[in-house]
Amino acid sequence: MEKVIIVRYAEIHLKGKNRGYFERVFCINLEKALKGLRHELRRTSGRYLVANFEEREADEICDRISRVFGVHSFSKGYRVPNDLDHILEAALLICPESGTFKVDTHRADKKYPMTSPELNAEIGARLLQAHSALRVDVREPQHVVYLDIREDGTALVFGVFEEGAGGMPVGTSSKGVLLISGGIDSPVAGYMMAKRGMEVEYLHFHSYPYTNEQARDKVIELARILSRYTGGESVSTVKVTHIQEEIHKKCAPELNVTLLRRFMFRIAERIAKRKGAKCLITGESLGQVASQTMEGITSSNAVVTLPVLRPLIGFDKEEIIARAKKIGTFETSVLPYEDCCTVFLPEFPAIKPKLSFIEEEEAKLDVDALTDEALSSLERFALR
Ligand code: ATP
Ligand code: MG
Image (tube, rainbow, N blue to C red; front, side, top):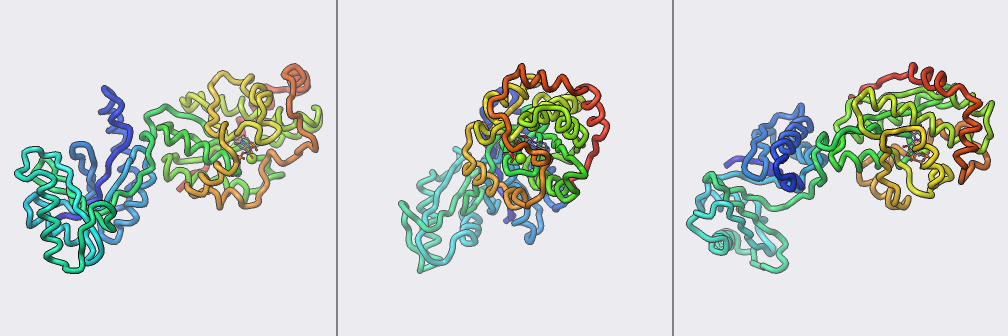
């Protein structure tokens, strides 16, 4: 009898001819997630088995698997030869000694001498014999013993389907640069795109010394939490202090945020192109603040040619918060350090700035020189 963790994948089967590619990336991602923990990853038809792990690390392995996109579900269980005695031996370890239960068999091996209902009845009867305090309830059992009769002469025996993260393997949907602030929204936006298979690069803007190192460390911590799903390795930071000072000095105050956002997009696009990324990702949500109106979006899109993905555009704040709590970024996001957007924040930011007015104000700045100068401040911080 062998202890295993059974991993089933999600949408990969949809991809027809590309299936082989999706499965390879999925397998690489699983290996990356399990790095540093003793294990053996085996591919069997339609699922993966994690075997040869340390018993005391089983929960850690499951925890890591639960964050790999493409995983539909996973189960701790046993792999045994497919005869009744061995199956029963494993079933006894899965099924508690009292309460209600049923046996639920899936037979991939259609040549197996017993049908699924026959197996359910036989193993069920043997379990009842072994434990007098057990009762069968096929409709609402407290416990289920799942039997999966494989085609290679083995059976998988397990008790629970744990929900996986779903989505598609990271790396199968191109690469994007996530503009990550220390806020609640942008980490969730990165999570959403990674869930659809996008590789995410992290880019953060700071305005040191107006913003401090704690604010930067907070963003690095957010990216580290996210990287457990997205697999990123580092955060790039760019200093926009001089840009903000220039805007503050020379331009209409109500356009502060709008103009800064345009610089952020230009810089992000330059970095994206260097990294082979195909889009920018932001945490904007329609109407959430003054700069997130259609006019604001139009103004920032106007300075880039790459598509800008805004996966939270139709989300309410509560929905975003719920998601942030689920993925584990919320607690860090609400730490009270200042973001560069709150430095020089005007009292009345323009809600519907006209593009012609924005361009007029922006013409007072040396946009190219300021962009180049900011790019030269690029730094990288490793996540581990
Ligand atoms: P968040 O919670 O992500 O900070 P927000 O609701 O506070 O979002 P804004 O501050 O208006 O919204 O920022 C909108 C988007 O612009 C953010 O979601 C993020 O993608 C990007 N952004 C804002 N500030 C920064 C920053 N300092 N560095 C990188 N990206 C930023
Ligand atoms: Mg913010």
